[in-house]
Length: 259
Image 1 (cartoon, rainbow, N blue to C red):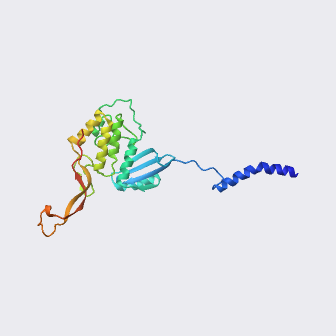
Image 2 (image 1 turned 180 degrees about the vertical axis):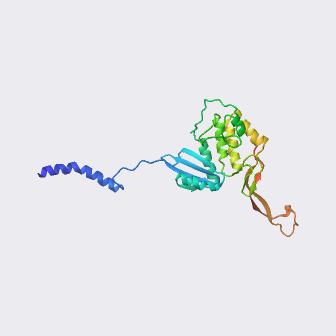
Image 3 (image 1 turned 45 degrees about the vertical axis):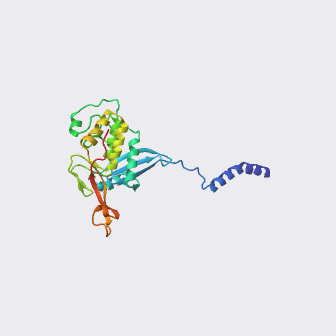
């Protein structure tokens, strides 16, 4: 009887040790495999819904939402039912660039771009759905046949700081027929078109930066003399100390020439 009990004890001992080791490690069940994480980011007139891989760093999918008014953000965020983080302009601009570079394109590249009444009436460049006055895309993922150009226009359209035609904002009024965007968004747009290396991209870049010369928006500072001293009169050359006065957002001439 004792020998039988001893044999059972010897057989059960490894299992008991395994359970004890798992308990010491913090649980009796294997750890869950890392899962993808979906988060929403918000700044200005842009919301980004992004999904990260199991490592929590690699961007897997992305969808951007363009807001005509910042008050539209709340219902979109609530509808998604996801945690949201407020980020600054630089972080959102970086995220827009990362989303642009994702190769999750749904365009039918086999079709041939053509002129149509709808694209002409909408002011959209044939073969694109985002390049022109507004867009004709059915969703963020919807792109035209000139994909490498269209992603540039789509990213530019989602600039978090912009003022559409005949709109007010940032203590400014845009009386033009076209949208004016932050200068950093225009810089990114310029670089994207150059990387596309196509006739369509060069045409768009030439019209935007060289022909129309669309002004951009940025914060402006001007130097102000804070100490002219007592010996040198009132001329600017006699100023002994300078400071910068913040003038807020202003329209400024385009800073780039497309070549």
